[in-house]
Length: 332
Image (cartoon, rainbow, N blue to C red; front, side, top):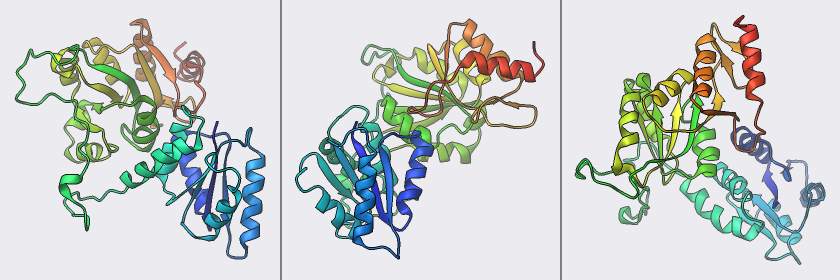
């Protein structure tokens, strides 16, 4: 696996490293190093060397640095001498760059390959809201169009696109629906071209619906639909080219969708927020009796429940979590 050194002036590297862990999970062979005001070039070079020495292998190293020509960059540049093509420096460090690096190193052993991809991703991560504000010097015609696997309104019902069957790359229960971990880590891991939040409540909430639609990552469209509409979409042959990531606020909504005919086989139980009447089962999951009953019914319908907050985390024991919830809710 490619080792990653995150380096910056001040403690920026430590902060972005922590943010990356929150979104993508803890990562092996990744170290933040910082140049503090009281330190000099030799200090950060020593920190970089010590970080690399802890990695399981040192053949492929990616340096993610804050500024071109700054002291961290200069010292990383000196370190890669003799390792050209295998030790690579990328500057302009931002969170999309770090998350993309985490995702790509799961499938590549080359620091150079990761570097060639993350330079583009880091630029795409810079966006403005409201989107009506024009970026100086940007050609509107040159803007990349978001992938649109949705059927156009002009396409008649009954038209078969692709094989006529929507594909579900992930179905997830998450109280927050679309947020950083989903928009980055899970989207990178599952590669959908559409994110669909399935919720009767949110579909009626104009502000929350708008926020979810605007939170979609580059190249992916996000929509909010009520449960009955999702059941119709599942059978609509115009969605044959759609790879969908489904989001449910709670187990009850997921159960209603499955009963309505949404053909998912596995559900990722990511997060159920704690609230009055719920018992805390894990760091991310709290349940009440309705949650437990819905999850039990889903399993009886043949749905596999996989408890995992982010792709890099180990899968937790669903049966043990259910047993704890039922015990503390006095359901045994």
